[in-house]
Figure 1 (cartoon, rainbow, N blue to C red):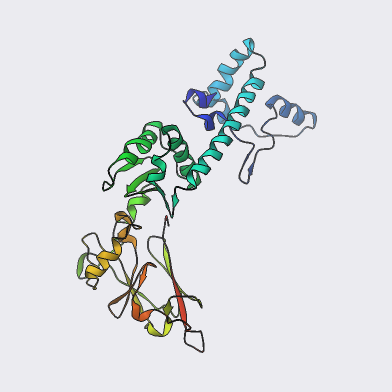
Figure 2: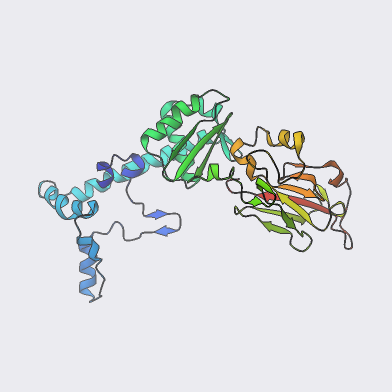
Length: 326
């Protein structure tokens, strides 16, 4: 009933589930009076939450004031409301199944293909987007913002980069892809991590002694890893003991290191939205660019077919970059 007064949809009207993942509520269908009678018969003490009596909370006001009045007219109120909640839960299960089927062809890496979503009806788009947010554990936007995402944002021209933000989440579009993140994580990737001395406005260079520490944790919570892999694309013997990791700043510079047109072209990949380009780690060997995230490696450090591990030679290596939201 509280969800109904708040204007909730089917998921809200389905009420609290008896099981949500590993969270179980086995006593949910048992009436309060039955629980109290059981405890009293067995002289089992219980703790009463003092906030339960505070009518400043909407839930308590309904429980203490409104429901007793309604029960004088409709004594079976608890049963009938429970039945309605059960029917809403069934309808929600069907909506989830439909959304999963519609999202399947739209998934494209970490985003959704706008062209696929556009082929859905307006109600189907909103249902699919709700499911998408739920799967990514992103707080649900209000109805107005959800309609804005499902309508104007998806219908914007191809070269536009519209954005919808709400408390706890954000959606952006880049070309044919839709991206979402919790809070402001979508845009956080474009902010430089630190300033390098002598290079105002650029990002500091980090040294990486990769032979001692195969994994480097970056300041944004992402990490780089070089690990032995017979199918890896890098040749360990072609790498110096110490590498440098840098990021492209908002003005396009890389802490005084080289990059130029090649780097600009690599970062303009359609798979990489503009607001994430500043988060792509750039790997350098003696000041020379040898890798852009795990998107590209320089030809002279790539492992030749058949290179094998042996002795102290690290042989073939696989470079992995795990970034937030990726």
